[in-house]
Image (cartoon, rainbow over all chains, first blue to last red; front, top):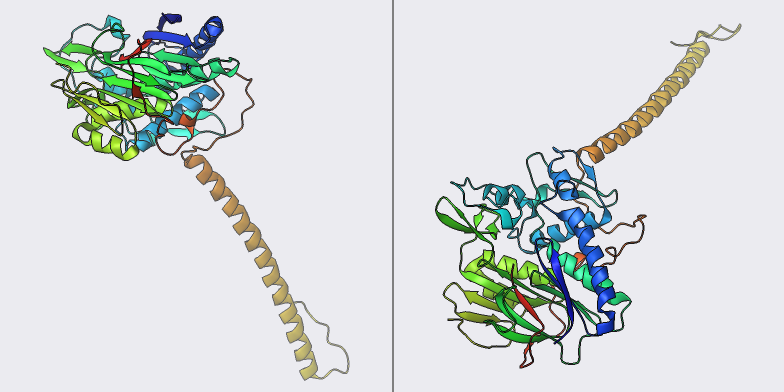
Length: 305
Length: 108
């Protein structure tokens, strides 16, 4: 059994692995520090985070940390590369849909008035002066990119002074850095990151870069007798139409894998062609459990049922 | 205001008229030169003021990297994710493996 360190952070499970077990404690400590910084910058659920203070700034520009600038650049890049299918101004939409507190404490509720996203082009980032301004009423949510960015930064930081390789998983979004084990990192690709290692899914060897999985099956809650999930279509503010229930993508880094996997859920039928055109190896699970593959992902079982 | 010219003795009226015309021309040129200087200074000042006004009114979306003076931190290195213009493919495609998995990738 490969030694690992695991704990809860950013509302999900963090796992750190090192190909050199003696280096694991130091790697885990570095990941801890990175996640603390990301949480202070980008959390939607702590009033003292930079993101919450900016959302409450009422249209005034706010000076932010370099980390927040980086997270903002990352979110804007995701919006640009997906033509707005991922939109960081979706904060008020997701709050309106009822996901307005730590997921573990969400209760069933009444009718929802869906709100479309404010529109990512309204974000004014002054990189040189480290300031960000939002129009009044627009709220940010970096949920689509911040965890993946944290995984990339943490893995890179942890591997910097290590001789071996490091794998960081945050809620199943995986970043690797350094020299991997000889046969790669063996990853079970599943629908739920909390599934057991021998649960349903496919096992692949990852030799570098990132691997992310987005799914509509995990964060669901009830409103007005119906069920909602957390991947919203920014154009309508409603949960994305469920063509694919789970999409896993491999890319050069966790951020890119996560952008692609989440946008694929929003894009629905158009997703396989888009992923193929980008050359991003992908595994898509349809709503009926049928599994499809794109861009060279190794073909395993074609059905989960 | 045209300068008054004392009429030198012995000059003919035609010479006096010519001298006056020359002086009037020189005075006019001086006035035009002064007005041009004021206009130039005014245009330069106005352009500067408009540029400042525009810079404050339209912040723009600055996405370029900037140097930083904040203390070093574990979060300040740059990964490809921040800068690449397209989503980047992995250097190696994942391969199916019979090895026992060490971690799960799934929705959260």
